[in-house]
Image 1 (cartoon, rainbow, N blue to C red):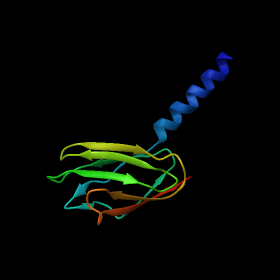
Image 2 (tube, one colour):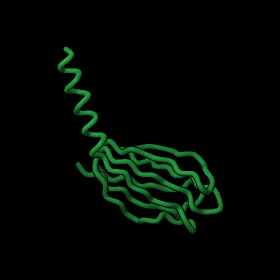
Image 3 (cartoon, rainbow, N blue to C red):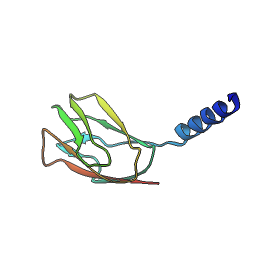
Image 4 (cartoon, rainbow, N blue to C red):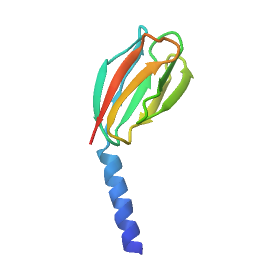
Length: 104
């Protein structure tokens, strides 16, 4: 039993080390990227570089999230655990949209 637990912990550690971390800033009422391709297990930070609040969210069935409103200088992170296409938007600025393509 201890050997199985050790193997599982090792696999989880290796997976988290291999996971990538990306950044998509919010600046001038735009996302810094229109499209981003990442892998399952990767994370994306969404720093707010504008002088006003943003509220990053997605209603895509593969990854529903709402990061809430946050001011300049703050960042919120999302980890993507399923492959597919996710549309990301800002609840405060409806013109802000981007796509994240998550691959295996």
